[in-house]
Image 1 (cartoon, one colour):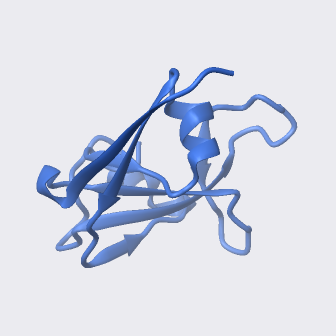
Image 2 (image 1 turned 90 degrees about the horizontal axis):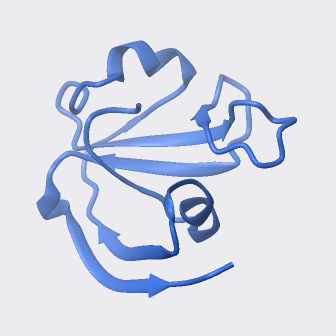
Amino acid sequence: FFGKGIYGTPQADYAASVYGKGVLLLSVMLVGNVFPVVKDDMNILLGKGHYKNYDCHYVPVVPRNSRKESETVFIPIAEGQNPVYDELVTFDESNIIPRFIVHYSV
């Protein structure tokens, strides 16, 4: 969606609601040269690896449908929008250092 890589977020509630199925992997993600992604960048990233010489994509996101309370599809912000959550995409698995596995139930 925001590049073909390994996705992470610093917000546990976002990870649990969008990606989690009762398990979260808490990790350290090493980022270097970061490409900030906005809505107009989607076409150049979809299904591809890192953009140019960037090591990581930083994606501030908003719900695709802000009126749907349980929305699980998020898109990059447009210019002037405030993000609800953040996503990071790295393209090298050695940039991820797993620390803890958290099992939870709702």
